[in-house]
Length: 557
Image (cartoon, rainbow, N blue to C red; front, side, top):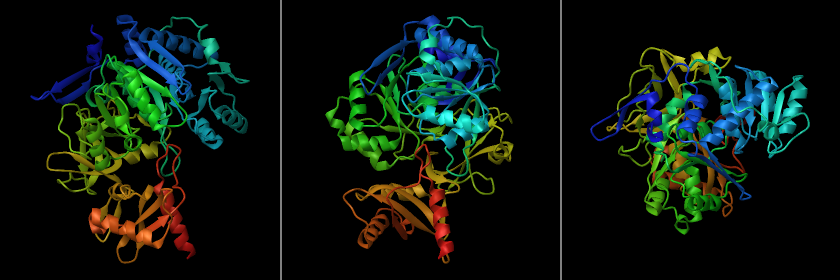
């Protein structure tokens, strides 16, 4: 079998007369296991095929073939088993961008354990919450952060004893993952699983309330065929770079499943602080062929001076994680000749709406629904919206079953929240958009973020996008503030760039700028300058905290 067609054994694809994907369904057996059926099998077909190129800020470099990844993941599985990790056990991985992450997560897949990727930014309180909520049995932590101290403190506070591993160095009370890994056998007996067994669990970032536990089953990786092949357009003989840290769901989108199903190599840059010039230099040096990052990264690239770098190897670029500003799209296209291909999805899903390969695009649009899902926009009464009408993005099961490849199994141990999003027979994303006459979706905002002012429905992003074009604005958050006459008015909370100072004159200037740039009813009647915006640990702005703070102030007035 040709590795370039390897993924096709697990799915059925259909294409229209122009060669555009219009049908996709998963056909893999119920006992599909990515670690055995993809990584190990490609290692047999082409053992020396490049799987990963890893480098760090110190210039260290490691190259791994599929045979390397297959062997190390088997040894990781045997190490976990020897330490007492069994099928169904929850293990948290705090490994930043260390290459051990790939050995560990695949090793957990091989023994049927539940992998819980987590960021090194977690505090002691965060770790305590995760240990209790997910009944975590083990943890593997990199020495290149202080997380071990928080893990130890949480363990003591809760009175539990975890099975602990350390990578890139050792700590007292931790099994040295690197030292012990190479001592393990190179063979393992396959552990039976089914597609409804838990494989991967993510804690959502929690813009409201405590994080929820999003549980995915063993068919989840197969949905990322669409992500990698038909959206990111990965080259089986090229290198794909997604900037995400392994603690976030975006890493599963761009640093593992879909890319390796397509036989493509992944490029991993293990860094502490994002420096635009460094990343651009690496794209040039390693001849990266496909790249994915949030729109913010491209703003930094544009300011850094893309013309100073040879990016001729770059053939395709995708964006996700936040809505795209049309000006960023236009400038990047002018400077590189490449279009930014936007996509939309959630931790609970895979790619739901996107500008897929070969499809026409419209700058600023999320694209059209992925053929993997039955996606629609509905109004408050559950009816499909008309073109131009804002509605909530929902997913309908095609066969009446909630068991959809790529869709989460449930919020673990949280039936109430699972039922809240799965109601009236459809999955409610909580995100809103409108579609135009051509079927393109345009992002508006979260359902609970929508501002209703004098009969208008205003999405925060559409105002934030305009504000970000003003030279004084470094960051901003738009929320609705109570108003006796209008119900709500638009409020902008703004962090200024270093060249500007807060003043009444600047407030008026910014307000007039918005009035002239977009519909006047969207301009912020209230402007507040702050030093920083409240954010979740993943960097998402907590608009809800701004709203709550404003309510508290109003109550004291």
